[in-house]
Image 1: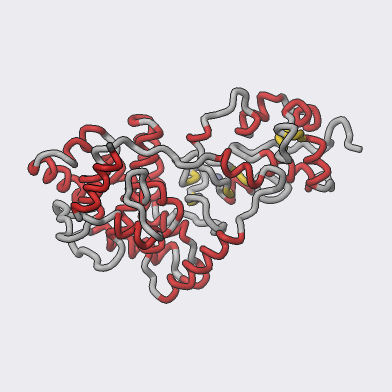
Image 2: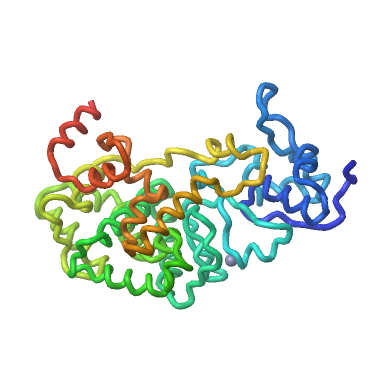
Amino acid sequence: MLPARLPIPLPPARHELATSYVSRLATVHGLGFAELWAQLSAPEHPATTRRRVLPETLAALTGRPRAQLAGALPELRDPAPNWALFRHEPQPGCPLCDARHPGGPVIRLLPHHRYVCQRHRHWIGPPDITAGATPLAALPEILRAQHRHLRLLRRHGWAAIYDAVLTGFLLCAHLWTPPIDPDIDACFRWDERLDVLIADPLADFTASRLFAVVYPEAVALAGVLAPASWRHLAHGEHHQRQRFLAEIGRRLGGPPYRPAATSDAVEHWMSWDAPRPSITPPRTYLDTRARCCNRVFTPGKANQARHDRSAFWFVRQPDGGNVILHHRHVRPVLIRPWSPPMANTQGAIWASTTLDPAPQADLAECAT
Ligand SMILES: [Zn+2]
């Protein structure tokens, strides 16, 4: 039998999952998670085993106003938040922020634009295998990129910037994959940052840190990939395209960008994607929640297997761009609704660089 109010005060963390908070409450009070969750939740519908936390019960048990709980826990908000603003996968946040919250791991549902803890100068990154602390003191440009990302968000709106930053990651990953263009200064910066963040590939590798390596340039490119005026130039007349390519080159720290003759990710984006609207997240947390709503979220075996596979290949061939291209975080812009269907990820990566007019014809058919 539970007491009317739990004796140890334990505030929720910002953007924390309800199951994560209940798990920490159970731990600090020496209770079982299943027992406490059963008391604090009820089935979503009579015909389902999925359970939803009861806000009034949680408020009574913790002694915290419902509004305060809802401010921290997105699942308690009424009306429900716009789930498209959040990543669909829960993840740990900044380890130094989490250290203030006892009771075990703090699992959060972060908004798409949150890559860096500005307070502690730590990389959070996209959902991935937990990397442990990734301090950014030696790489202040990554911290500045988060500030710039937030400014772009305010100026252009979340949907345009969601697409543009992911596309920035995708283009950087292509450019960082051999053969490297020696005119692109950013490639040398990426190698230098890689040496700082993954000094020992056996011990330090996570795909998340590779995203940190290219994040400043991904955000810099987003500034030209998002605005309608630049997108118009990207698929405009020859002189307009040249102006766009000059800006891409400038943001990568080099001369005007020169697309490769047969396949090029930048030129592919200019021809295929720039004329079309920004994509929206293909999945939201509501899709993930169906799998993990009655238990504390932990990374699945498939995630661990993907990480082990990437680490295996990265140790043998440290090709950071290739790891990013295969990571699920860029998948929404690697495979867009109008992309030609491919049998596997390798095919989709090829398709995202092709300048072949034949898939263009397929695209036209899709559009009709
Ligand atoms: Zn922090």
